[in-house]
Image (tube, rainbow, N blue to C red; front, side, top):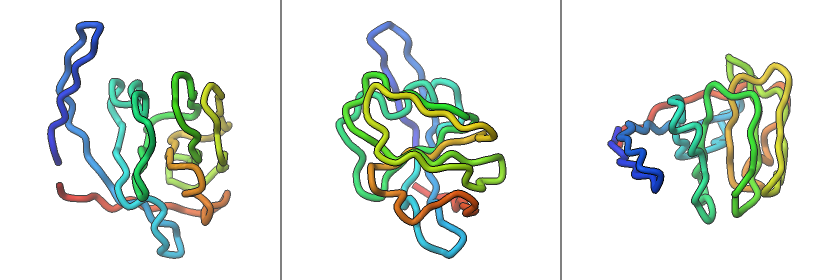
Length: 133
């Protein structure tokens, strides 16, 4: 784990502890090598805003979340909507900036670089393995 200090121009300052995990598909293939776990409200609210891109193998898990928006985003993503047990409900591919997506039954969302969710489909069960940093 590492401490990440966030300073916002609105005067809101916070220190959040961001944890990372590796996400694998049920067949053992790696879906995301280094996935930030956004489980606190501030981390979910910030999400990927302010970034120009995601590095290969990088992503973010928003929990709880059943919907996402791409307002003010600068790049497209793949969004994997999952239930509480990380069973894939649906995958939205190449979600463009300024769009919205939601899926009934989704309780968490994995956001990846566009094209990174190619091996994932509804019904797959994902698993998390924490990473020590």
